[in-house]
Image (cartoon, rainbow, N blue to C red):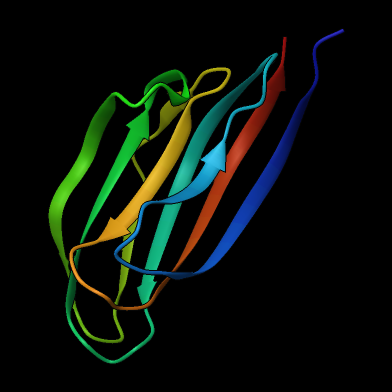
Length: 109
């Protein structure tokens, strides 16, 4: 029987290394509702946000070198889907510090 639940993932301290901020488990489809990215270190940054398709190393960019002001929050509200084993990733261009909040609808198959 299929189910649907509203969920949230919270990721603190994203820096210039790739951070997986949301993963669709096997047998699940995630409808991403919003992504909030907040700079917490007081320095302007740029970030990349992308889907790693099937966790296989092929990246599909949603944002590439997107500006994020010091102590500012960036809000992405366009809906998109992660299918089973896809991952949503965020990385900064330099050593910094941001928090990421992802809200989504988790649908089991």
